[in-house]
Length: 307
Image 1 (cartoon, rainbow, N blue to C red):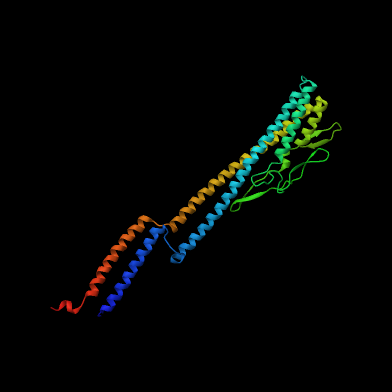
Image 2: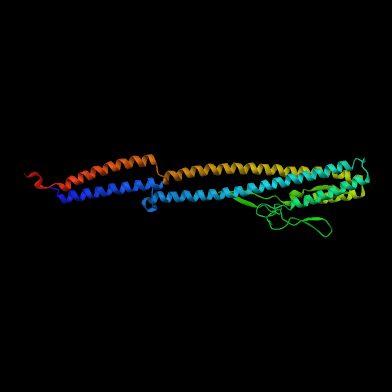
């Protein structure tokens, strides 16, 4: 079979164009750091990359949620710890006032301090988070949870529902604590044999009233009640610590997931510079050889052999 000069020319032209295209792609990879300049050049890899990016976006959203919950729990822990300190301060005052060694004037000073402590307890119970939502209103985060009534009592206006937020696929965490739990509850037996359920605010008001009349029996009764209520608050602090530890674990898991997915995405999209440079050198040598061959073929003529 005879091969004409035109066929040689056509084959060599295609080879040159192919080599130049390959070199162009490699130079683009080296310049951009990406294996494909446009998705259409490798549809399968592009689709896989989009899928991984979608997963990474979800992980970032979960991480944002976790960070918000972590900040909220940190604020809550600070508030609840302060709340417990004030409850135990009332207990200390009750112990001091029940000793019988202080004058009515001293008891009056203790009463004034107890009134101030009660106001601090009310203020802490109405604390807000970084987004200006009430911490202890349940799901009614725009409702002030503890409100003073006309008779001077403190009523809870929130609810006891749990507020959950998604922090991973199929995994949610509770981000709120009910004000009912914060205020606590104790049972007090009455002289008639019945029982009353009282929270910290009711106990504190009764204690202040007892200081006002210097009624030792009622003052002494407050000691155990404050102690029990303070221990209940301590249980909440422990629960907050457990939830914070769980959040830390979830954050670590998400960070590990992101690292894995980012590496997978890098393997799909990012240029392997060592491999690309080696291929570019090889292709440039091949192009040079093809150009030399092309030059020789195009110069071939019967007259070159006739002398």
